[in-house]
Figure (tube, rainbow, N blue to C red):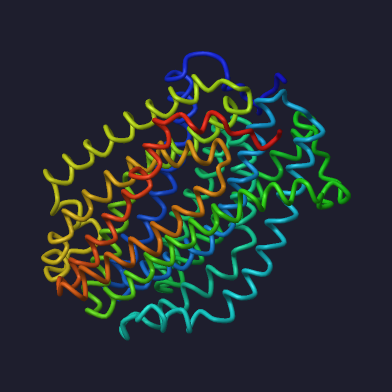
Length: 454
């Protein structure tokens, strides 16, 4: 197929294709990270530590809800990528797209209903400090109400990623980030709506992005064979089963990790609003590495999926090694910057001396998180790209439940290390994916697996 959306990643230079395909993802993640950071900075400056705590806890809530959609959207992305690698069949692509839309948008309605009914219970479960409790409830309520648009945006993005198009999702994120920045200043800085204003800005920004992306796909519907008619959304058993087979383990992996992170956060929140605020800031700084690693993971998953579907295992191996080298290199660069300018970085969020003093204690944990994300990237892109559902499930349980919660409890409570124990236990858990999957990659056993489209 030759058109403006589908990009064949089974030919050409592997590092060249990977870098060119990753650049729009990197820019999109920069913008995504920017408007997450904008929430923290504006709320931190206008509302203070209580606002930072609310956005941090509420952000975990939103990430947990979003991960449910992302797991199934990634499954659809892999199905699309492997299908293209097999020969780009219009009819099958159209069916996958229709089923993906119907399943995830239907799921969003259930998630919206549940999440808007129980935000107070979530805040209680997270041991939210009294000073930030009401702000947290308001943030979670608004985010829960906007899940339809958040889920819809993720579906469109993963459809285009599976087709090898990373440029247009960048444009949609730019729209969302721009709207979010303006509305943050208006709702939080001018109207003084606090954390609820930051949540409103995020949801409205993603809603506009979803609407624009749907218009884009509709106008180019002939290029990939999906007509957007009501009958095209009819669920097909074989496609739904394929999405469930891969999507459920990915979703369980993501949600298990998310739940474990929220558990660790709830343990830290017990120590008061200052530690809660610092934990939120440290989490955001740790996510800096995701600007590149998440981009390489998305690009690597699609490249792996297309090449695995085409039987080009030699290219799959090259994708793995280049993703690893680039990810670790970026983590090293961020580590150098953080060590050189720690005070300046933390002061962007809050200049409270008490917050800054505690924030310095979190630097080793942040560095561990940088390299944990970097080593996880190539292994995750390999497992997702080849559609190894079982491994995703096992790693979700090991990372999210056994190791992260286990180490956090051991170091934070049993060994009496307190907040530092929870930080380090959670950070060390980030290396489990690499420890398990890297030997599997080296063994070459993955080459014997059949692609999902077979």
